[in-house]
Amino acid sequence: MVTEMTDPDWEPVMKKAAAIITNKGGRTCHAAIVARELGVPAIVGCDNATEILKTSEEITVSCAEGETGIVYRGRIAFTKKEHRISDLPEINTPVMMNIGSPDIAFRYAHYPAKGVGLAREEFIINNYIKIHPLALLGHEYLGDAGLTTLIRETISGYESEEQYFIEKLSYGIAKIAAAYYPNKVIVRFSDFKTNEYYNMPGGKYFEPAEENPMIGWRGASRYYSDVYKAAFGMECKAIKSVRENMGLDNVIVMIPFCRTVDELSLVYKTMEEFGLKRGQNKLEVYLMAEVPSNVILAEQFAEQIDGFSIGSNDLTQLILGLDRDSSLVANLYNERNDAVKIMISSLIRSAKKMNVKVGICGQGPSDYPDFAQFLVEEGIDSISVTPDSFMKTVNAIKEIEDKLAVKVMG
Image 1 (spheres, rainbow, N blue to C red):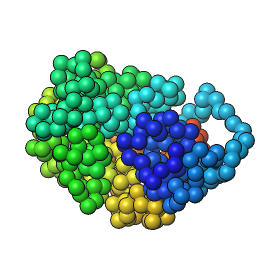
Image 2 (cartoon, rainbow, N blue to C red):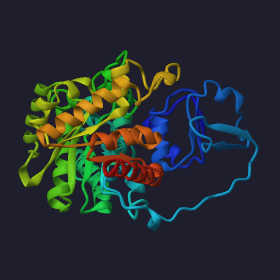
Image 3 (cartoon, rainbow, N blue to C red):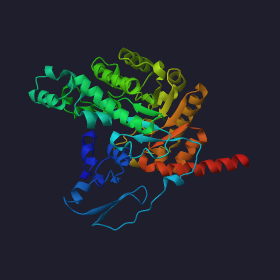
């Protein structure tokens, strides 16, 4: 599959692709993240791939040469190297899995992961529900006959639009939670940006046009908004159903892109309106630490949560002041930058001081063994990686822990 750039609408096609090439994007863009979780080779930020490559042309895509992917003309022979999961070493630092699609949850459930460090709701919403949440609830007032017909056909067999959303979302979450039960599964509330929601059926009626959606109306700021609250309520009801009706109480919820402590309180208030309360039925709530304020005010946030999960993808772009989806500044995007490492180190220390868990679910430790070493040395509680990086990361951490043990003994 060769295209300019991908977004969530492309995911059904991406599942069928043998490889993915895009003109735009960086190491943590949508195409790169989804391809890793699907186990599909991907090369992003090629600038002119759509001009050079022709439809039906045979090529070989290789991501085995390091950070730079290579496209060969023609079909090139290759060899496979198999690894036995049973040969993986025992390590002290728990390694978890990032799972986007419920369809792949059981495929990797036999890996010795200590649970799921990041399950993304928005992938389920896009692939299972396929309609903008607010359009489901309000399509009859929009005067769009085509949209109403689509929604009525889509929800056929369900009592209501709300029931359709809740059951579809709860089924997707439950599939992931069941695959890893009784280990913890951290489910992140929806974190689509406005441009991504806009592209869903009915989205154009509810989403504003933002100059920079990456730092716009996303994450926590949507949940308590009078405009979006009803849609967030359906997410809360789905989580409640998974935990209480299906008995999958290993599900933890995570709040993304929460900019202030006051905003966190507003999210909690909204959750309670829809039947979710931190501590009730042992419900834990994590905060995705991806905004600099989460680090600077870590101790204040820690008073109201059960754990942090460092979202190093967004945290890095906000600390360094760059767009992680831009191939023009991709060379500057680096989680190993001293500024990023100082912030992460500060967060880990604050979490330890406040006695709350702290893990990481960004791409850095999957790609860079020295970054994983830094995290282990800092005392991080867990590292969550994509399935394709799991074995590599476990082996890298084993080497790191052995070196640290020798230092202590010395």
